[in-house]
Length: 288
Image (cartoon, rainbow, N blue to C red):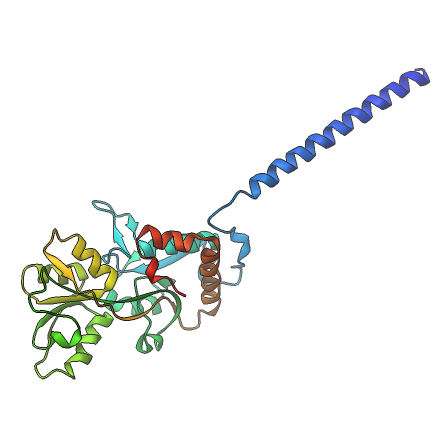
């Protein structure tokens, strides 16, 4: 082969090599553009869960009393969980790079079930208070008060807890509203007759059938119950004692609590936290 032929082959080889380099660079650039596409959820690599024993199986198991719309409920006619708490848990699990599984559990025994390892966390519209903090640790995620649900037109003129003295009030067992009634009874000349139910819908039904004069529940729940009552019920305007909701974890689950705290912050930073609250018309419950 002549020197000129060798030269031509060398030039051709260089041209082909340069084309390959440019094609590879273009391919890398395309991948970079794909990788920077805005996403509402950070990647799971942002949070290290290798030291979190509860997540070693790739699943975050969440206990919840799934009868408390709009926070947790089953879509009508299904066993599909829905609600604000469900969306928050799913968003956090996505950040952590794990699946989420919900376990329906009665609210009045849900902390006991957590402490006997029936699930990893509780996310169930649970208000943080000193008594509960003795049993479990919390990651705060919302701030919500109590609402008073009454018959349409508010015939008893109820505006606050003091107006419940001498009346019958239906509440869900194990809630802070049950404790509110007990505390208020210490101040009443005529005691409140407290009627408790396993679920809040049963307590609301007692009110609708005139068995009770009022129902206490978390304000967004009372508001939704009024909106869905076909005009039979109203919610008193005053929201009582707004306090933080918390995701409960077992005492000693330090690594899990840290991971959840980081995941919630990542969801907030991504914009999805506010998007979820807006979806459920509960932007006013956002943490500061």
